[in-house]
Amino acid sequence: MIKSRLCDLVGIKYPIIQAGMGPFSNNNLCVAAANAGVLGLLSTSGVWSKDTQPWVYNDFVRTGEADPEDDMATVLEKVLKRTYRLVKDKGGIFGINVMVSAEVLPNSQVMIDTAIRVCEENPDMKNNFKVIFTSAGDPVGWKDKIKGAGFTWMHVVPSVRGALRCKKAGVDVIVASGHEGGFHTSWEPVHSMILLPAVVETVSDSETLVCGAGGFCDGKTLAAALVMGADGAQMGTRFLATQESDFHQIWKEGVVDAGDRATLVARGFVGPARWLKTPRSQEHAKNTLQKSPGVFLGTPDDYTTIDMSLIEFEVASIKAAFEGNKEKALLAAGEAAQRIKDMPKVNDLVQEIVREAEAILRDVPKKLLA
Ligand SMILES: Cc1cc2nc3c(=O)[nH]c(=O)nc-3n(C[C@H](O)[C@H](O)[C@H](O)COP(=O)(O)O)c2cc1C
Image 1: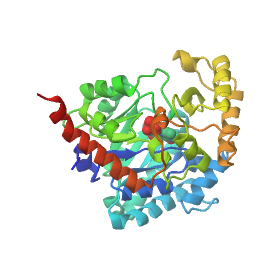
Image 2: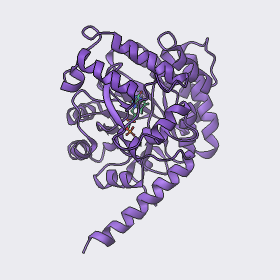
Image 3: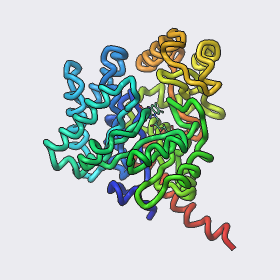
């Protein structure tokens, strides 16, 4: 059976992480993934989009069985309790993905404080709610709070420099996120084939695990991640296109129908973002070239320097995705979309990924070693 240090560390059956995909809801997807034996991650940034993107917020609250009038902490508490209720009998393991970038820090604090409090008040929950996964910000300073409360701490980075920062911060599992990945990507992109082995070589040791993200979507790519020295692989786009996924049908079908050379990079809320290639995203990319050229030059800009019409276009296009308006929608997804041809149930998908990875890892020595 395929197994890695990640399985031992958090108690999952298979070395796969279902990626948090905020601000969109993963509430049902996370339950299905956890119950299929992988680490399920809830996204949390939808909880604070009530005023800016009510369509995103309402969907998050609806799938999490919370009340739209609840405050942020109460929404998260209800989502956590619902997830626990739905995974505990099958021993599913889950966590939360929390963005900790400077602009959203007050919200990040509420999310992490709430998670810790809910776990303390419901000690049984600790058997299943085991991971806090931080992203999009500086990891330094979070160790005492997260690890002090008994959680395994994961953080995602796009570079070796970021991985070294995680090491300094005391992160347990560093997730190296290559440029192939869906939605927000790095200003200075490096793809998984280069990034993952570089991060493994630099920081993996007896205390620090490394996982790959970006482009992993089947048994072949999972096996490749493990062979490159990783302890597992995080998959976003692959899980987005599943029966239980909370994403709108046009988004899931967009991934399945994407075909060859399926994505492009254009402006996203906080920097470059990878979208499915459509006339709408091509228009957005052309506008990005004019109004936020740093996305293509690797030079960060921010809300004080860019033309806000780009952000308004993006917000309107995400709204269109929630309304099922294919023409006006922008659909975030990774390059892996080109390799995804079906929309299976999560458990069947996980079984197939694991079966394929095991077969490859068994066969490779026979085929390739004299
Ligand atoms: C629609 C979408 C939304 C995402 N939102 C987030 C997010 O809120 N926080 C985060 O850390 N990563 C986010 N990601 C990145 C994923 O967590 C994951 O790292 C990425 O999807 C891996 O690459 P893949 O798409 O090739 O599997 C998102 C990805 C997608 C496709």
